[in-house]
Length: 143
Image (tube, rainbow, N blue to C red; front, top):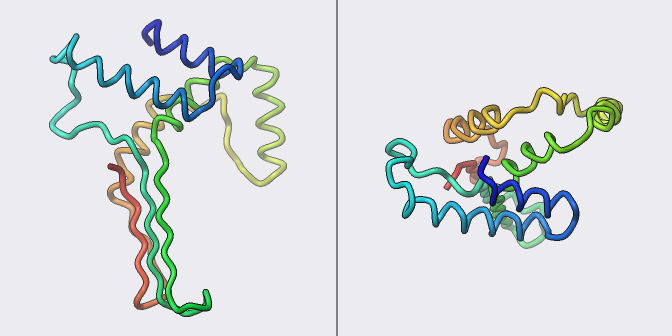
């Protein structure tokens, strides 16, 4: 991890900046990177920046007959979250894991690695979702 990225994550951890501000700063760093190191560009596909979930429904349960949900989540937020776990003391991670399990979320933050998030992001384009509403659609993809 380069020094600038580490400083951004430290400011986020200290509460000096918000997650949104950290995402914008890291995005700005990534935009500067191709100029300084053009040969480090990932494969043939550009690195996705957002997870998008779009739901269209015409089931009529909303009162007006149609509903639409369009959620766009910065993937950098997920990536930053994984990086932040390395800054959390092991004793705190143990307590967090205990509370997550108690709440029904069986995630072990000590096992969460950056490559796991990248693998998840890579596989999101293959997500299939069944919808009970014949006229409704759900799309999940990275852009």
